[in-house]
Image (cartoon, rainbow, N blue to C red):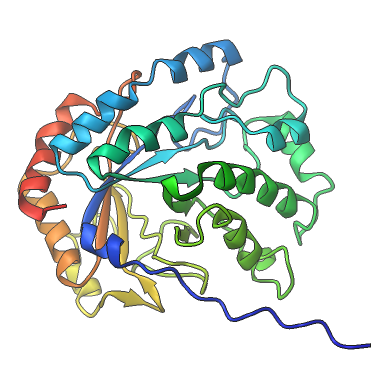
Length: 325
């Protein structure tokens, strides 16, 4: 019998537009709070009311005024509530009424951004929602180290979103995996099959897989188009030290083939204020990375209506004036 054909060589997406953007913004819009691992008491109708009240046009105007070239929105995280419908997810988890919103907020944001030339990117987890026991059990069972049951199910979920949104979505930031072994398997499901699912609606979209908070910035797989770059409470290497820029001094535009990118918080925590840096430091760090061909994404808090917290608008405007976009 003939041996199975080897997969064609993988080609990373072109990141020129991303590099030229220089910087962008991320917004956590979740049913709970970032990194929360406790179940929440929220009715699907209440979640739908929140999502319906999101002012996509108002957010687009804010971003345009600050010259923000791209924006990430969180589709969901640990709660099991998502801000876009997904029939595949609903069929797999069997929760009724659905915890996926009726409104496709991602599609609405893409339409609102398009006239302003703002590119929309999305945040997704690579795992079942940790604080929704029903969804977790039905997506993961039977549990196994290879994750051979779960991964194809999750690939089907993200593939539905990707195909629906198509070329209106320009990138994905995948918050994991933290256990790399199943994704590094030579056969699907693996990094490649998940990347293919994410890119099914737009082969030119950018993907990064985040393996946690580590310095210096890294890429964990050849399927990263750009580095995940997560940096949290400060820009230092260890507590009590000033930012150690020497750790970045030898960086160039590509790190192990992936576009250099840092992702950090403008406030005290993901989705929370107040602003922690003076404008000069935020601008200076962005310029430092830009000078090496890198990109910086800044997380900013959002209001319940989907607008950027007014306390952060002056710093965003200062970034726009100084770093372009």
